[in-house]
Amino acid sequence: MSRFPCRLLLDLPNWLGDWVHALPAIEILLAANREGETTFLLPAGHAPLARLFPAKTLIRPPKAGSGFGRGLGGFDVALTFRHSTRAKLLLAAVPKAEGWASAGRGAGFLGLHTFPVDRARHQRHDFDHALVALGLAPVDGQPARLPFPPVAEKAQRLVVLLPGSLGPQAKRYPPPGYREVGRQLRAAGFEVLVVVGPSDAPLGHWLARETKARLFPPEAGLWEVAQVLARARLVIGNDSGLTHLAAALGCATVALFGPTSPARTAPSQGLVLQAPDFARCGWEGLPPGLVLRACDALLTGDLQDARLVSSITSGGGPLAQLAEQGTLNP
Image (tube, rainbow, N blue to C red; front, top):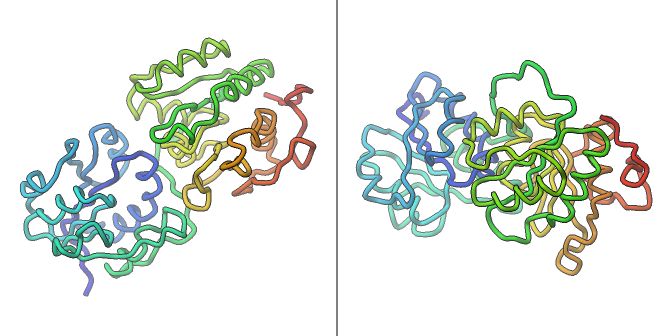
């Protein structure tokens, strides 16, 4: 028997990248519950993007647990997109709701309905088993896309650098590499904009100074950042939430991967460059010239449909020579 329409609570991820990867599953649930009432439970910083969806919004305080969950009445079905024990304690405390959570970390002991997560697949499929258990189709190949208002006109010379990232430092492409990429783009006639969050403000100021680029205010909110990304002709970033946001906005995106797996967390579109043999060589196998070639590929359309670039070498290949020869055309 279908559970929809119903009063549905979706407990959304803490991290922006996880939130973006969950978008295809969220869209399926929203479509199934068109005649019901859906509520997003999410961090305050993500609330501006929630206005893009036909759902109510509740702000989840940091470290909210079972005490907070007990105050969330009036739901028939509740599903958490987080895998932590605290998230499951919160969900199990929601009165009278049929709770769904990923298996493990006490979910079954708490009386929640559980589903397995196949971590060998891309993260967008993490909730396929939950969707099927709720009588819905799993996520297919659809990319994660945000229904953001279309921009009146792209800024044809605007390139955004996203050098920051929350989490392990190893995920970050080296700042000197970003400096070289930014300088080459500036020399080719592009306007370079550095975008970082508050915790990466020192890095942002340094990179903007070194490349003579502009720094977008680090304290800006997510809605303002999304507006800038949506206007950019090209975005270059790490395996980070802002890079995934840019891809979900439909931006031409070059994502730089080191220790993390593109098979698991690649953005929804654009080009992915992974440093080869990262455990042994670090970022040495992904020099700035190679990143610039990927930029050239997206700007010229040579590899517009590529999902994963993993074998471009500095000796040549399908991408134009440009780092030394200045063939990057704005």
